[in-house]
Amino acid sequence: MTTVSQTYRRQSEMHCDGCSLHSTCLTRGLSQVALEAFDEIIVQPRPLKRGQALVRQGQPFHSLYLVRTGSLKQVIRLPGRQDEQVIHFYLPSEAVGLEAIGEESCSASVVALETTFVCELPFEQLESLAVEHDALRAELMRCMSRELRGDQRQVCLLSGRTAEQRLAGFLLGLSRRFHARGYSRYRFQLTMSRADIGSHLGLALETVSRVMGRFQRQGLVKVSGRELTVRSLEGLEALGEEG
Amino acid sequence: MTTVSQTYRRQSEMHCDGCSLHSTCLTRGLSQVALEAFDEIIVQPRPLKRGQALVRQGQPFHSLYLVRTGSLKQVIRLPGRQDEQVIHFYLPSEAVGLEAIGEESCSASVVALETTFVCELPFEQLESLAVEHDALRAELMRCMSRELRGDQRQVCLLSGRTAEQRLAGFLLGLSRRFHARGYSRYRFQLTMSRADIGSHLGLALETVSRVMGRFQRQGLVKVSGRELTVRSLEGLEALGEEG
DNA sequence: TGGCGTGGTTGACCTAGGTCAGGTTAGACC
DNA sequence: GGTCTAACCTGACCTAGGTCAACCACGCCA
Image 1 (cartoon, rainbow over the protein chains, first blue to last red):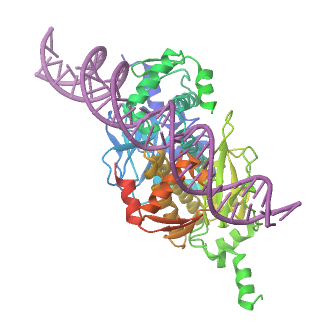
Image 2 (image 1 turned 120 degrees about the horizontal axis):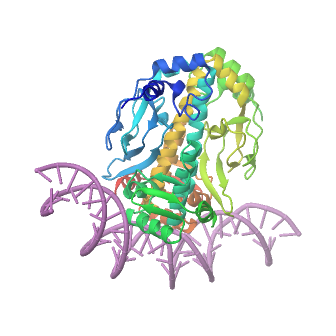
Image 3 (image 1 turned 45 degrees about the vertical axis):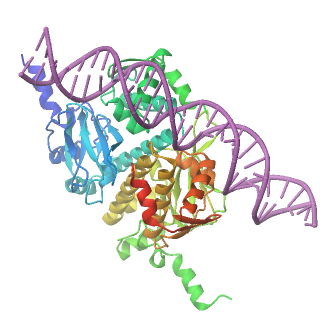
């Protein structure tokens, strides 16, 4: 059943050049020359199954990863505490490991939430490539800066707002990120469990469940299992803005 | 009353070379040549008074700033909400503005908490300098990466821990940061108000006040006004670790 | 010296959401 | 098909911390 066009597509998807995420990923704006050099250093993705770890807390840092398809969560185990804390979710084209640059070891684990393909970028090679190509260096900085802004948002979400506001903000954030990556902003999978969402938002999983139900009854969203449909972007936004 | 040695000291402090923060700041590890070039691009500090803004939310981004002495808070005003949210405190040798790199405008304001001196680094010039000097480029990345880890901590603090754990974590964080910059880890000024701390930790200011009082009664700290003395680092750490 | 404004503390009360416990659904495996 | 488990939902109860209000301590200015 493999057609010529499928074969072609598969091949091209093995290189940044033909990758559908090219325009949103680290490679954005690279010259053809730079892109080819970049392609060279990528260790080609081996798929992760749901639950498999991409990096483990405490292990030495040596690579960044770019999410190609799928999603992951970043979890941290704090000393003397038995439960894990979800600090981040990664979607396609997002970079994993930026916070470990300049450190010997990784501060948190990153685990696949579904079958996930990533591109591995050995950091030493990436760094020497960045010396040569200004555009890559600039994009790497922009990428980190963007993540800093993302963390700002997260801190704002968490600081003293209600469960409604947190969940609304979280869903809007997902919607925005999916949209920026060319997916639908109105319909997407929540690949993470309610417990993961709760941990990430500083809420009990029961609260996540209840509020999600409330949103559904109010006609803001439609949830069936892990598929989410946003019914009223405005409604969700209004929630976040009251105070 | 100006002695020769004071004059000398003042002069030398106008350059990175003689600056007491050299080893913890962006300039760490720069060669003499790079350091001199770096010195060239610095716009020399004009002091900010308490309450004065260093950057304002929405204004165009063109410079990074390094804190020389004093402290600042980063506050964000969210659309449709009247109260400001404190997202960050800056101490000496920390960099302001990293999250605005690659953006046209600043996402938040930064306001002095006391009389504060900063060094201004026009970003375009910094960037071209970074092209020439690998060490600077690397240090800039490490700086951003460190800030990402700081935000991770912050998210962990905020996510569903108790008021005690948040405040203990906050105080420990300050202690650690002061210590890393050569100040005492046991005794420092809380230059921010209780309201600022509360906003930053997602707590009401009354709660901050109460918990601070509790800590004092438990012999963990001594607070008189805004001067804080840590009596038991271990005690505070133990608080953060239970769960 | 007294009034005033700002920041901090303390107490009384109340509610958002955590905790615990039971019940349902859906996929994985035999 | 039946069983098992993990994820999710829902209800009852309770407590951490938010809210409101009074009060204090201080620096500032007239």
